[in-house]
Image (cartoon, helix red, strand yellow):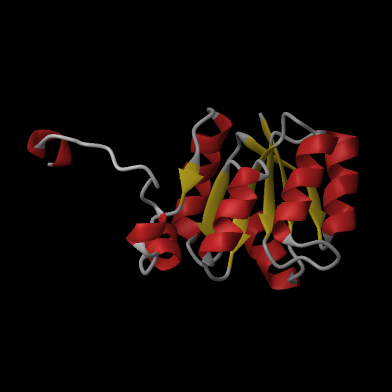
Length: 155
Protein backbone atom coordinates (compact mmCIF):
# COMPACT_ATOMS: atom_id res chain seq x y z
CA UNK A 1 0.00 0.00 0.00
CA UNK A 2 1.31 3.43 -0.98
CA UNK A 3 1.02 5.97 1.84
CA UNK A 4 0.20 9.46 0.55
CA UNK A 5 -0.15 12.80 2.29
CA UNK A 6 -1.92 15.72 0.65
CA UNK A 7 -1.06 19.26 1.72
CA UNK A 8 -2.81 22.23 0.17
CA UNK A 9 -4.18 25.45 1.59
CA UNK A 10 -7.42 25.06 -0.32
CA UNK A 11 -10.07 22.88 1.30
CA UNK A 12 -11.73 22.12 -2.06
CA UNK A 13 -8.40 20.89 -3.49
CA UNK A 14 -7.86 18.62 -0.46
CA UNK A 15 -11.35 17.19 -0.85
CA UNK A 16 -10.96 16.72 -4.62
CA UNK A 17 -7.57 14.99 -4.30
CA UNK A 18 -8.77 12.80 -1.42
CA UNK A 19 -11.78 11.79 -3.54
CA UNK A 20 -9.49 10.77 -6.39
CA UNK A 21 -7.13 8.82 -4.12
CA UNK A 22 -9.90 7.01 -2.20
CA UNK A 23 -10.96 5.37 -5.48
CA UNK A 24 -7.70 3.40 -5.63
CA UNK A 25 -7.34 0.54 -3.12
CA UNK A 26 -3.52 0.58 -3.40
CA UNK A 27 -3.40 4.10 -1.92
CA UNK A 28 -3.84 5.08 1.73
CA UNK A 29 -4.05 8.72 2.78
CA UNK A 30 -1.76 9.29 5.75
CA UNK A 31 -2.65 12.95 6.19
CA UNK A 32 -4.61 15.85 4.78
CA UNK A 33 -2.94 19.13 5.69
CA UNK A 34 -3.30 22.83 4.95
CA UNK A 35 0.13 24.38 5.49
CA UNK A 36 3.88 23.81 5.81
CA UNK A 37 3.52 23.02 9.51
CA UNK A 38 1.09 20.17 8.71
CA UNK A 39 3.37 18.92 5.93
CA UNK A 40 6.40 18.70 8.22
CA UNK A 41 4.39 17.19 11.09
CA UNK A 42 2.87 14.48 8.88
CA UNK A 43 6.26 13.72 7.33
CA UNK A 44 7.79 13.20 10.78
CA UNK A 45 4.90 11.16 12.17
CA UNK A 46 3.82 9.05 9.20
CA UNK A 47 6.83 8.94 6.83
CA UNK A 48 4.56 8.76 3.76
CA UNK A 49 5.81 7.32 0.49
CA UNK A 50 4.44 10.27 -1.50
CA UNK A 51 3.70 13.87 -0.54
CA UNK A 52 1.41 15.87 -2.81
CA UNK A 53 2.28 19.45 -1.88
CA UNK A 54 0.73 22.67 -3.14
CA UNK A 55 3.33 25.15 -4.38
CA UNK A 56 1.43 28.04 -2.73
CA UNK A 57 1.44 26.99 0.93
CA UNK A 58 1.63 29.62 3.65
CA UNK A 59 4.72 29.96 5.88
CA UNK A 60 7.46 28.62 3.54
CA UNK A 61 7.89 28.86 -0.20
CA UNK A 62 7.67 25.71 -2.29
CA UNK A 63 11.39 24.99 -2.60
CA UNK A 64 11.88 25.49 1.16
CA UNK A 65 9.06 23.06 1.93
CA UNK A 66 10.49 20.45 -0.44
CA UNK A 67 13.92 20.81 1.13
CA UNK A 68 12.52 20.61 4.68
CA UNK A 69 10.41 17.55 3.81
CA UNK A 70 13.41 15.77 2.32
CA UNK A 71 15.42 16.46 5.49
CA UNK A 72 12.57 15.33 7.75
CA UNK A 73 11.64 12.23 5.74
CA UNK A 74 14.32 11.44 3.11
CA UNK A 75 12.42 8.52 1.57
CA UNK A 76 9.26 10.56 0.95
CA UNK A 77 8.94 11.47 -2.71
CA UNK A 78 7.51 14.97 -3.14
CA UNK A 79 5.23 15.91 -6.02
CA UNK A 80 4.60 19.64 -6.29
CA UNK A 81 1.12 20.67 -7.41
CA UNK A 82 1.28 24.00 -9.20
CA UNK A 83 -1.17 26.63 -10.38
CA UNK A 84 1.26 28.09 -12.85
CA UNK A 85 4.66 27.16 -14.13
CA UNK A 86 7.39 29.61 -13.36
CA UNK A 87 10.63 28.15 -14.73
CA UNK A 88 12.64 29.31 -11.69
CA UNK A 89 10.14 27.76 -9.26
CA UNK A 90 10.17 24.46 -11.16
CA UNK A 91 13.98 24.33 -11.21
CA UNK A 92 14.30 25.33 -7.53
CA UNK A 93 11.79 22.68 -6.41
CA UNK A 94 13.56 19.98 -8.41
CA UNK A 95 16.97 21.13 -7.20
CA UNK A 96 15.70 20.87 -3.60
CA UNK A 97 14.52 17.31 -4.08
CA UNK A 98 11.07 17.32 -5.68
CA UNK A 99 10.49 14.11 -7.61
CA UNK A 100 7.65 15.55 -9.65
CA UNK A 101 5.88 18.70 -10.75
CA UNK A 102 2.25 18.67 -11.93
CA UNK A 103 -0.39 21.26 -12.62
CA UNK A 104 -3.20 21.12 -10.06
CA UNK A 105 -5.97 21.05 -12.64
CA UNK A 106 -4.62 17.95 -14.42
CA UNK A 107 -6.54 15.33 -12.43
CA UNK A 108 -5.93 12.67 -15.09
CA UNK A 109 -2.16 12.92 -14.44
CA UNK A 110 -2.34 12.47 -10.64
CA UNK A 111 -2.61 8.66 -10.46
CA UNK A 112 -0.10 7.85 -13.23
CA UNK A 113 2.18 10.52 -11.74
CA UNK A 114 2.06 8.99 -8.27
CA UNK A 115 2.77 5.52 -9.66
CA UNK A 116 5.64 6.84 -11.75
CA UNK A 117 7.27 8.69 -8.85
CA UNK A 118 6.68 5.77 -6.48
CA UNK A 119 8.67 3.50 -8.81
CA UNK A 120 11.57 5.94 -8.77
CA UNK A 121 11.03 7.92 -11.94
CA UNK A 122 11.04 11.70 -12.15
CA UNK A 123 7.85 13.40 -13.26
CA UNK A 124 7.14 16.61 -15.10
CA UNK A 125 3.51 17.01 -16.13
CA UNK A 126 2.61 17.23 -19.80
CA UNK A 127 1.73 20.94 -19.57
CA UNK A 128 4.62 22.01 -17.32
CA UNK A 129 7.53 22.10 -19.78
CA UNK A 130 5.81 24.14 -22.51
CA UNK A 131 4.39 26.58 -19.93
CA UNK A 132 7.54 26.87 -17.83
CA UNK A 133 10.21 26.78 -20.49
CA UNK A 134 8.41 27.63 -23.74
CA UNK A 135 9.95 31.10 -23.87
CA UNK A 136 13.18 30.19 -22.08
CA UNK A 137 16.08 31.74 -24.03
CA UNK A 138 18.15 28.96 -25.52
CA UNK A 139 21.28 31.07 -25.21
CA UNK A 140 21.15 30.63 -21.45
CA UNK A 141 21.21 26.86 -21.84
CA UNK A 142 24.31 26.70 -24.03
CA UNK A 143 27.69 26.00 -22.47
CA UNK A 144 30.04 28.96 -22.31
CA UNK A 145 32.81 27.03 -23.99
CA UNK A 146 32.43 26.35 -27.70
CA UNK A 147 32.51 22.69 -28.60
CA UNK A 148 32.92 21.45 -32.15
CA UNK A 149 30.37 18.88 -33.16
CA UNK A 150 29.65 17.20 -36.47
CA UNK A 151 26.56 17.87 -38.55
CA UNK A 152 25.26 14.38 -37.63
CA UNK A 153 25.68 15.07 -33.90
CA UNK A 154 23.87 18.36 -34.34
CA UNK A 155 20.91 16.57 -35.99
